[in-house]
Length: 119
Image (cartoon, rainbow, N blue to C red; front, side, top):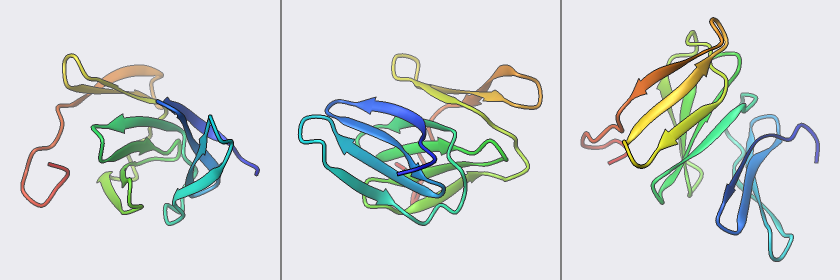
């Protein structure tokens, strides 16, 4: 496995980019490797959990994506938005991300609660 990046510990799982464009996890207890999605087609930089339904991932070259636990991918922010790491505060329900353009933390917003979206 090459190109690991964007590490996140989620209970007994280590979520990461296992190869470019592939969101994978290692079960820490069993050491087994599995793929969540292989259809991102972007290098993953930051990963944060979104409730129990998936993960929000960022791409250094631009873009923020939602990846469901079933592997479905939704583009949340356009590719021209240059991003780095991403963080979700469960206490305040706010997303923050680092912009590579300014190397500052920016407020991304509250979780989307529309119909047909992430719920």
